[in-house]
Image (cartoon, rainbow, N blue to C red; front, side, top):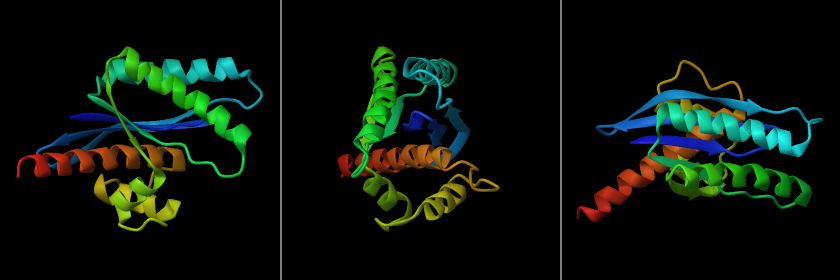
Length: 164
């Protein structure tokens, strides 16, 4: 199974492609789409859309795994990030991808077993699980890979449960 993990954002939108084979996880590619803060919102969304669509066409994922939004203080930021997330979800629908949505707590629990894990702990686990030489430089990339790993673990657990 090929999983496209996305950590949605308007300034930075992390993405990662992993593949599960025989209970092993392999990274195919990852990165971060960055847009300029002074650009109009429609241009920023178009950049995110065209890049994510390019990854969908190139890697042909089976599922899009995306993080649920969680904002407690800044509504304006939540709305803007929600627009980026909406663009990504629209692309999943247009390309007939299954969609899996995980909360930050679910991602932290899946990777570390600890719901209050910090960004560094998540990055360290991404590095270990995917056998990377170092933690991805940008947190958004680590977060996107973490969401993809969470889905890999969740789908594996689902198969185990349904086989019993």
